[in-house]
Length: 288
Image (cartoon, rainbow, N blue to C red; front, side, top):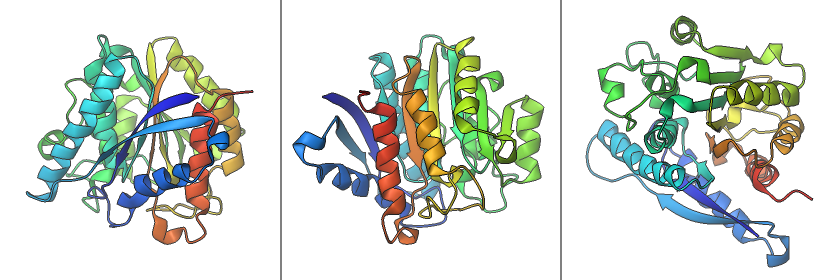
């Protein structure tokens, strides 16, 4: 049985809601309910909780430092991992830590599946919520306040970042990504996610030794994943995402998978929670 190192981040400090911090605990409990004979995949959980003292920015900074220590260690040990947010500001720690753990951080690629661009800074964000800013920091385009929350010592090269599924954004963050020449595949451009995702991995594999995948659950059509913080109409059907992930099951270059932005208040029938579990099993489970 495969054992997957899993980091649960019980925080919603970077977003507008208070409930997305329950995602990791709820998912851990869902896996624990499985009978032993059903467990083709065993998650080794490590939980992180925000500290109580200090400002929100200080709490987030310390939390991302803690996240980065886990992902850095697993990267150094060449261990694949799973990260369950929280809001998407956890990406500052997850991928900043991976960059810290690589001998050649310039050879790291990231695929970002999201309805949004998440490339604001404090200077451009209409909400001031940090879950809309991680890519600006990961690209080294942060303002001073945002840069202080980023635990990485290196940045992702713009040519090694690919956004997939975008359908809701502001002009300021689009300008930042466009000026950096980051590849963006908008939702309306996708005619078969499997082909788009495998093509993205093949492209990054030419220049990258290690690849990460970050999934914001609002990437998925809200009919299939209603339990998200900031839903956007349209998107990829859950079945299409699962088929695409099955094709890259345990891809040798992929170091980790991050899933974020689950909101249980909008998921009364646990539809989104069960989908999260399927995503993990499809991507990391043993193939027949």
